[in-house]
Length: 398
Image 1 (cartoon, helix red, strand yellow):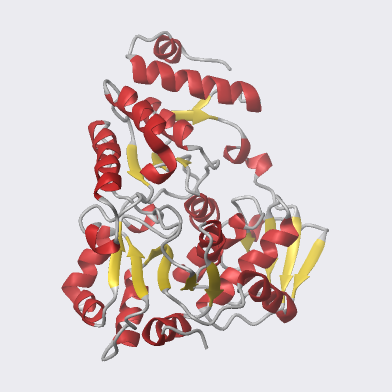
Image 2: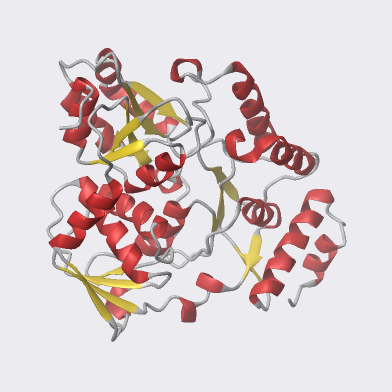
């Protein structure tokens, strides 16, 4: 890559170990992908926060960087492996909590905001249209590229950290307009009646797109929570972290509709449910909030739980950011949910918490949540918020 004099001095170590190591990572990435230069980024979102994923080797790496590394741009964190305040009530061990807190301490010394959410755009890390950023959580990357119209590749944890210390990232991939052109037209004729249908739609389009950029037509309207759910699903199941939705997402109006086309019909939505859902009736874990619940979703959960009780045989989590939980506290939603026996899981989620062996069967609104829960040896059921609350109250999927 072509480096400026200042960038070369960074690479030579004149700004310390963390910046030198970061420049080595960024230059190596740039060389691999043919980037000509580095480009400034407005913000960074770092994944690889859970000690469950990092282990001791990852913790040691973070501590090495934290000795002299300080971020140069707004940087937020993906979910950790536990609720940083109420981890005991969620069944997290003392040993795990000690290690997770050491991870958080390292990130704190770097100057990173301890946001611990997969929806940074809901808590203040909101890029402008066309802005270059370096984000690493797949659903957030897809949301940033598609719904906001910012520009980011799907960074790994180390490359995102490197971008934070340098304030730049290699200019390749989805930072370049020529790589943001849709290459498959998806005609949707299916009806989307509930939130989980958007996860099923993402599953179907992800499978059909196969690492391409879909241009989607046939959808009349979509709210933030529906788009949030779709972003998580479509990239989990196969598409690139960018899509265009005619009449809904920015940039779609100026795109040429690709010649190659596929259809998503009602039968495809049903097929998605058939593949995501297992043959199971007894539910011992209900978790909503993958990606993290918005305050609107929390309000809906509180209304559905009002006057009800969660089954003694079932654990019910509302995964969300701590800032959304604070709003829920003020609005009285927290009291309603906790009075019913539900628990808030702030700072964490079902995908990164150490849950293997704890639960047998999950109910959720999230297709992505089902994907990762199966890796924790759980049976899965995806359905509407109403169906999930019913499962929490009865312990059964009906």
